[in-house]
Image (tube, rainbow, N blue to C red):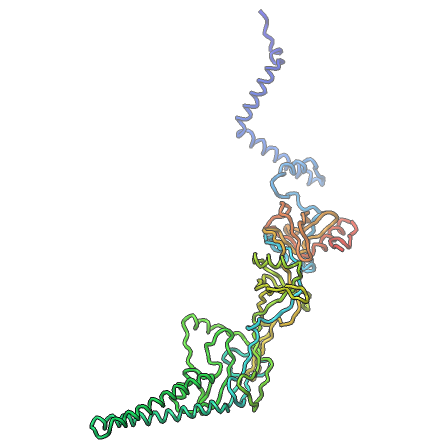
Length: 506
């Protein structure tokens, strides 16, 4: 019988594989029991070693290396800021770089529109901007209440005219005479009806008086219609009949632009002025409460004592609250204009100003001309331009003067979108700087700004489009200006010569 050898049993390959698998199974089964204690012992040993080396003034490269590897992959930089790619800025430095709260905002995804620039000019809205005020009747101007350049609102008194129109005066006179004759005839008819019933007077006489009364009433109706043709309202004519007096003066008020809720031309009797009544629904009353649009008095041609004819222009009122921007697109830009009209993309206007340039955003296309100009070979398109008041003051004598921000004839440029990129990281052009083949932005990290390499998909004179590839994320705070100065500061700090042309393209 062969003798059993324990040493030979352990040296057998099959035995080693079996014992190895058994040990692995035991370690896996008891992992929750022994791993926390072992992990705590390792952390305590590393911490004690690091504290001991710091107290002795030295550094333990192996302990720091172990700490970094233990924390690798948690998504945070616990090792601190890299001096070569980070800047610590004081409050004064932030002010010097212009990094106010406006330029330190979280990144947001937005739509970016690649644009072309087209020359344009501010123009009036035909039929809305200019309103001509004329005299509806022949007369002599007695008072001019408005002055050139003054701002008025609909309903304000502009002129008073003494009527000298003979036809109007004659018609009123004949109307009043016929009204008096009707009253006489009516009393005579009533008297004849009484005596005719008693047989004292023949009925033929009563019929003759009744026919005469009907002729007078027909003549009055015709004269009322003639007065309305002269410009009088129904209530004004009825007031003449009720008051039994001739019209003397005509008052001309500033008209409404789109509606006629009041009398623009008001007539006065020999000693009274009256207006026609206005009836409003509840919705109309709500609109009346709104502040009326000021109208600027321009081209005032009337003077006190001047005789005017019917239809003669007295002044022009201009409403500058809403204007048009007329763009002149060349033939190659016509498809872009058509696409903007089809998709409703917003436009931007660039207006020169004292401080440089003013950008008016989110402008909407109103309409595109139906024909190309035969001489310039350009296609006109019109964009709505809401206006704002820069000054609105009243003088001690009650005159109001308004100054508008945008003026007719003002030249500018308009940016027309030709391509849209949705949900992009769009930053101002000064937020990114180029160094060699790399582009960088500066992300705020506490009191430091870390330089982060990014991929720039597109760059123009105003914006850079950053690829959303994980280098920076929406919600991160980056410096939206002065990236070039911060890049030069990093280079100076590291001892490298600063390239004065860094971040600029020639």
